[in-house]
Length: 404
Image 1 (spheres, one colour):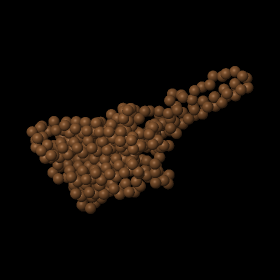
Image 2: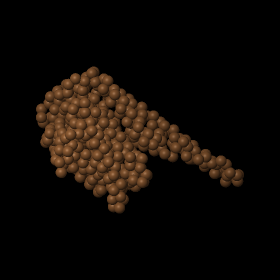
Image 3: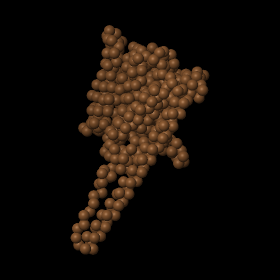
Image 4: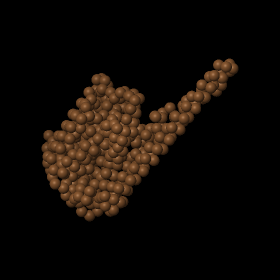
């Protein structure tokens, strides 16, 4: 059946196939989500609010099922014939993480077990699909590296990207919005390079995520979260696209060649990677496990300003876009120097953001305390003198929305 479809698609221009890949992924995901919500609701498969999460209502968390379906169907049907051999192993790796994520969303699995599954999927793709980092492009003063080091480095990068995107999935639209931007940038690069298979794969992911975003951010009736199923699938897909970009860039010529590609890739993923690195350092410095759940992520801090999830997502996407532009413009200074610039400026930016959010939150807490004292004073006056004093409201400029 797939071969017949591929034959019928042979006469379509490549640009139209790319659009078809996007549209098919979007349509399949868009119409699958209401059914997923219905099934999740009937089986009581919800993400429940707790002291750490940012939502207040029980919400179905199987959006990753629809994302996976739309993305895989589109990539296979529209882009399958453009992959020499590796698509089979890519899909196998995605299926492994899909099963692990689905199990974690339903009954929860131990973080170590989830990490082990991630390593298996990453190793499978690195070894069998040959999607691996085989050249450090001057990072650590290294260029080509031995095969074993290449595999180990590739698995590390896979794990970093997968968990980076998984850990920023704390508010509506953030993980999917960041991933849409990253996948779009890589998709454009693959198109200019001439890698049609990965172009279609990139925009199939964009299509699936845009359909999900419609329900996750703007949905009322069919509100849904992507869950670990979605974040793991997206993380693996972004990791595959990023590492494939690094591979193809080594043989790219002319204006399509990106200098300092490892540093540029880090800038492309600045929000998930740097925020995860920052939070891990904070937790370790406090004597905690780096995987301890808390509210240290930058999106949690921005919630202290009383911003909506959508506003925070736009802010962080804008920051990520700024770093993409900066890295592109400064790619000529060399991999090491560009990494230094990225880490230094990101450290300053995140430090001042966190500091401002903390000071703002403290100010609001002080205002709330004074308001409570005024209420107590007013009640005492009424009790002593028998007349009503004006009692101030606790809700001051959205202060009740702030999180300490």
